[in-house]
Amino acid sequence: MSMRLYDTARRAVVPFEPPPTVRMYVCGITPYDSTHLGHAATYLTYDLLIRRLEELGHEVHYVRNVTDVDDSILPKARELGVPYLELAEAEMARFHSDMDALEMRAPDAEPRATESIDLIIELVGQLLESGNAYLTHGTAYFDVSSFPRYGELSHYSDEQMVRLARARGGNPDDPHRRQPLDFVLWQPSLPDEPAWRAPFGVGRPGWHIECSAMAMHEHGPTIDLHGGGTDLIFPHHESEIAQSESLTNKPFVTHWLHSAMVNYEGEKMSKSLGNLVFVDELLKHADPRAIRLALMRHHYRHGFEWYQTDLEEGTALLHRLLAAAALPTGPDPRAYAQRVRDAIDDDLDTPRALDALDDLASAILSGGDDPDAHTMLCELGRLLGVNLERPISTGPA
Ligand SMILES: [Zn+2]
Image (tube, rainbow, N blue to C red):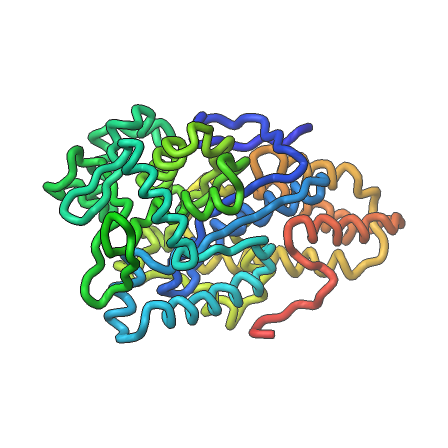
């Protein structure tokens, strides 16, 4: 069976047939706060996909950017009274340590927005020249009327997009815009904000153009698979498409894969509600493999509520798997292995994959004399990023 994945743009599960080397771009973090479970769930989705693609013999060129200058890091740095790049360094170090603990495959390239400014300036200049953008009051805006397919990724109506732009800080009511959905490519900096000199004004980039520049710099005009959380579909990814395709006249992304949001005990997990579950807090008391298993018990496409019981169930499953992995033999594992891989290939159906893995563990614990059972259980564990050859740990290593 070949792999099938949901595609946001096509709104269907479709065959995913990437080339031998897969160009993958996933929007990274804005490093101004700790990694929470929502980040972990998102990056886990792409980690699993990469593991399976690599098992199938593909090479994956995985790019995950760092948004180290945008509208959220600068106010936070101001509030803390620290230089924004110092805040970025500290939070990136924490993010990397959380990702390493969760055994997430490191990206092959991790470009930073502040290191891509020259290219961003060049691209904004090209969009102004081609008439896809305009300059007014020191700000360069992308003109969405120049890109009739704006909205085709999210499938939102113009009214829905305006409403969401308002809710997500897009400022559609700004009187300088020709249309409410036009978005900022370049803007003047406030006096205490970083600023770069561009032919069209001293200032800093808008968020969306940063990702277009970094993605095209690393991958060229077309990406095989672009990911991020579902909250990025609009306006971020919709705008990435408009800018990039206006610049290159080529499809920007072949396949869009978005990971759903995680809520916490009935409420949206958000900074403003103060209910973020931080990965480093969980890691103080939990084995990182239990966190991975707990997250994988939910399908990436279905938003879910995180409860303390999730972690308890992940831990219980880890104990069962480790108990089985301690036995040298078991039944013929081939049918179980097929079930695990079929489930992953069927739109990353991790709950079903874990059921099959759990069934294999139960069967091993019931007996059998085939040594392949042990080998296969560990191999399937590795496919899911769960090392079953290491004893349990319940605190920081
Ligand atoms: Zn992005």
